[in-house]
Length: 521
Ligand code: NAD
Image 1: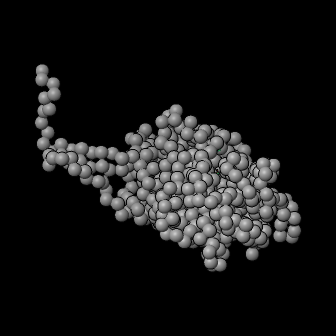
Image 2: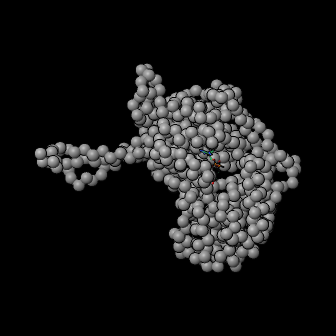
Image 3: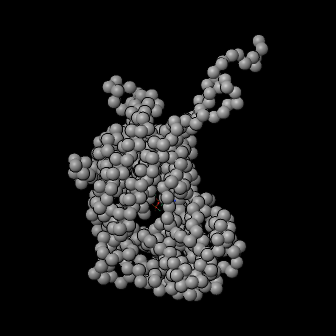
């Protein structure tokens, strides 16, 4: 494809249907975290490139992109895409899902190299991305065009319709680069918006590839735009830009707060998907049988260490009933030490490296701080010995279990975003719930028990956006995802994930108009 050749030359900014270099000519090398070697080059965009992309998205939304042959200023919301019938929009999204699955191997591999995850995780990500496109296509296709409301009189016809918000700025993180982008792009397009996406500067490759697929699927020029570049320039400009109507951000609390502050100046709609410090509560009854014990330990391992713990919903706080603690932690630590680290593209590897040296240094500093505060190291806590499969230059860190932690410790309160599991204990159900809710975040949590009443009681009391009972990590595109507290504002996925990208409009028609006579003169 022509676009691909251009991207190899660093043309990774897409605005108004054109692949462009950065206006400044700057580029950035993309690093494979398994060996710290560069393997791709992208354009390093800045505010100027952002303005070009926003102007393209604005023109496409307003129909002022020259497509009418008159070069007019356009009329708000009257571009080709917002006016495309819903069935056609849904059909295009389904084509995108098919193209993603056609390119599953290529994209899965790219995600693996870019983000440091295993290829199998990369493939599963692509399946989930395709599911998101299908889900939002089906959701809009099945909808009634409006909701008629009872005005209390036969002389009034009242209907609530939903319209696209406008130009959406979509800012995404590095841990699930394409998945997080698709949770924004699919509903934004389904609702009829145009967008500018800014992927994380360290993992932009699959998002660039998705833009190629959107073009191949037939999306009109200017609807899908991407600017590759850093957060403090491209991201910050998107958040403050007067021609952006909505900003949807997934990332850390510090950047998310800055985005919300910048967006407030122009009263944009804001959706924030931020971090988590997620409790995994294990009652002793869940471990009463060998099978139950094995399942709870296995899932605790998965909860904490999949993708080296770089997951917003990672079960990084194990809260286990005191009576089973020693046995549980011993088995957990034994299995954590056996997790096979290595380059994600190699067979048999179970965990890749951390995404960057910065992320590993951050993890190391949290572990050192925890040990200084009295935590007891049961497993990991260091970089692995380099070997033929573990390049010395890669950003590897051993899965780490820290026992005897308590809620005042920094490592228990703050998001590490690395392979670090802390262990706390409880004696009563009330104590377990109090610990699990003692966080400024509220993204996800789990409870393990064989007592059905207790499972429901505890799930009902947890202040987290997703609660798993006897499971950890699964999500459904048809169910809302998001957090309580500082885990964010708004929801992705599910009907609410579409509603974020829409304005509700009430159309009230008087079928028998007459004077009101409020004023008598
Ligand atoms: P980050 O906040 O550093 O960066 C996220 C994105 O924001 C990047 O594209 C970055 O360039 C951009 N950015 C940075 N500063 C900005 C600014 N001032 N203005 C605008 N944009 C800016 O986060 P990260 O390190 O890429 O990702 C890890 C974080 O993301 C973790 O906290 C994790 O919990 C969170 N996360 C949350 C979810 C969720 O669904 N809630 C999902 C994935 C990741």
